[in-house]
Image (cartoon, rainbow, N blue to C red; front, side):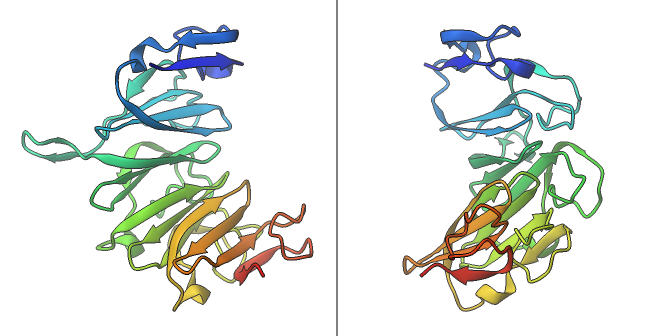
Length: 244
């Protein structure tokens, strides 16, 4: 069973109306759908993932972040039409989801990444800067690679490949992509200075990134104006550094 409470701006509670609530209110559409996890952006928009690999979206949609081909806000969770596997085989099965402030990312069981929503900084990874109204596979440098982990910053996206490589795309103004410069990337770009290091998981804050190695070491990069990188200074980093 799924319940929601709190501020209902843009219909983000998914209860079918715009009323905020101090008490848990049932989200009928998602009940008994075997929900596995949620992801949310600050729009706010929300994604829900079922154990069967279906994705539902609702809330703010001014940048097409709900992936339904419109810019109309969604008051109730609606299934996102993911690409079809083949004739009669149904949609691709999603195993993980992530949201930036106004974009959405989904990972399929076969390691493909799909993205949609706001794309002013390249965060959808489509090589152009127009917003993406429906899920579209992120290819270019990810083509033929199996992605095992995804995470989003406010306007950036990171992905980990099964061999431990890390790729980032989108806004890079404070170095949050970790690629050695502060230039936005419209397509996935490899974090080159981590070559030889096997990363298993990444986590993104508003504008900084943390990466965990298979040996339990932690690397950080990106915005650091509050000391969020834990390196003893407040200097932004565009290259990964290990936290001692």
